[in-house]
Amino acid sequence: MLTQLETEQLKIEYLQSLETRKESKDSWGQDIKEGLTQCPKKIPSKYFYDDQGSQLFEKICELSEYYPTRTEASILRKYAEEISDHTGICELVELGSGSSTKTRLLLDAYHQQNEVFKYMPIDVSAGILQESAIQLKQDYNSLQIQGLVGTYEQALTQLKPTSWPARMIFFLGSSIGNFSETDYDNFLSKIAKVLENGDYFLLGVDLQKPKSILEAAYNDSQGVTAAFNLNMLAHLNHKFEGNFDLNYFKHQAISNEKKKQIEMYLLSEKDQEFTLKNIDLKGVLEKGEKILTEISRKFDVEETQQKLESKKLKSIKVFTDENNWFALILCQAVK
Ligand code: AVJ
Image (cartoon, rainbow, N blue to C red; front, side, top):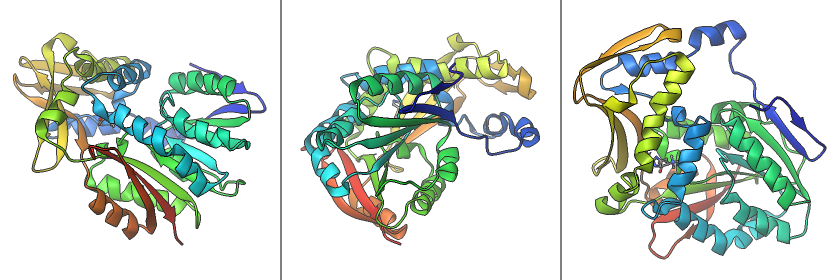
């Protein structure tokens, strides 16, 4: 874990916890408690991403079955320059930056304009944020980097006004697909609120497509997605002194065609009990019972544009690949 990292051009800071100390102690693990005591049980997807989980996700992105990453990268490769021409010099703020691999395609385009610019990666995983920030600083000398460790929620409520001519917030990889309809709506409202008139928002969305392609992407033959899903239990064991036995859970991912989403579950392979000691939680799972760990919604371009417009995020251009599998929607805040 990093302690402090600061040079003139490279800074990494921790965002403040939203609660006061006392409250945060009370609400520690509250979301887990709620999720595991309701029926059906669920665990928030953000618990995928400890350092191990972030690394497993990077491996998922390289799988041949997992088309979103390379498809989005191909769109960026083709249109990054056009995007940078639209926005001009600006501050780039990335939500959920991870290893920033795809981001490099965008940074390259801005870099080629030969201007100094600023990149703010935001991620919950301090390890991966620090590692990639140091690497980026070496590769882009004129780049000013200010990394923020924290959740989207923290980032969007704590971002200060920029001193740059404009700001572009970007949210790639269709991570927005993890949100429920309500969270999706609230998230876009927060984006719209934090942007000033004329600022940009670049959103990556995975588009609707046949069940067979979708299910293959979330049930890869090497079992990396399964390991990623199971790692969530290891993360909980570590964080909350839990006793989940990973040997008795199975990964499951199915396409719910009616809801236009992938649903990922951890299936209990026997009747079992679990304890999360430091949040005082005990529970039982029946054989065959499923814990929902993720929904990954698949989008329709027009519907998404309308949704964005309803938040006064006017779409200026939609970039897509030749199969229409993935889209990047560039919009501008009108206030
Ligand atoms: C990072 C949320 C976009 O939903 O496709 C990949 C996560 N889960 N394989 C997705 C994920 C299983 C991914 N997002």
